[in-house]
Image 1: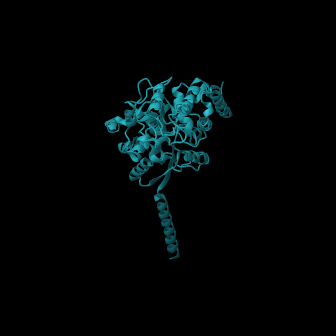
Image 2: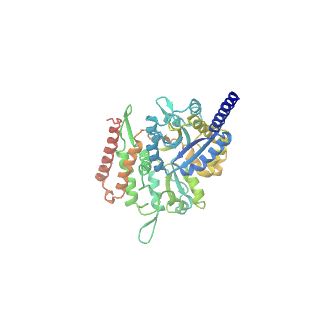
Image 3: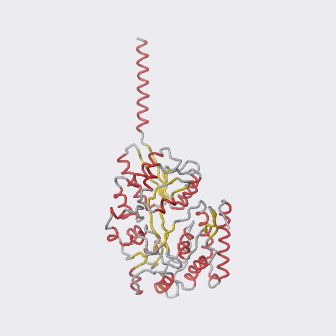
Length: 437
């Protein structure tokens, strides 16, 4: 009897262990995704729900933060292995984390899909480092000129400006002032202040059109500042003249998306997310989109972000599978619908018109954000680990410069502003072993 009792006890213990193991095995795998684009939250949450319907054992939680905040969170959490399972970010933000091993290379399945021909070659090239690809494109847009069609019609215009001369001429005519001479409506809204790298990034769009660059490559993996030249001078002059000579914008009025939505500006340069923003915040405003006005070079920024599997993840296989689900899963069209109808950021694949043949008829504004104008050159953000630092430091100097009216008709002062900024950019490059003459 004692032997039987011992056997029963052992059997019960084994059963309890098996039951406990089953409960543990049945516990869902929880993954976390971070994005710096709150407007993308509906997309990611829907994708997570759809994926969970196919994989009930996987739960993906989405957290959205302001862009600069999430970049700071990545800087702290990813190198220490305490970050999210999946992160969405710019490639130039990701690059430092690729180099320090905080982001994982693509699985063979993701790598094959990225190279399958459904993405722009720039996306493949810029997502490759040391022979491996990292991340999958999730959204994209070219930078383009948004213009208020009613204001343009009132001024006698039926299209956006084709070049800088037209842009300045139109901006002067489109500007409105009150009885004291204060600007009440920008003819051309320029980014004059703000935190982080954004001011310099928007200035850089015009710099590229003038033939300059943030970094000029001077050898293999060697660079120097690419704006202490005539292109940089012309771009800085465009801003200083706009504020203090032509006065088609001002420091003390609304700017950016809010200004355009409330009628405080007639045109400005931005990306396709404004389509979603305008649907929600200013459905009554009539506007269209045109290509970036050309100067020395007809070109446009080809902007996109990637989603990455991080080295912090306890479930990298599931995270990679979720990336594949968003990129080429059975609910692809439904997810793209969310981008078109709600978000505004465009789906990144180049075969979207096969699934959405009427999208430009339904929302004409999307066309110039997606289709490259004839003879236009595309360029990406510089994918150096120091890009964000260089842009942020340059932005601080530009914000200060834009507030100095004494730079008007002061070429020596403008050249010194550019020289001092370029010295700082070069110092950043030197500190990271990237500088070359």
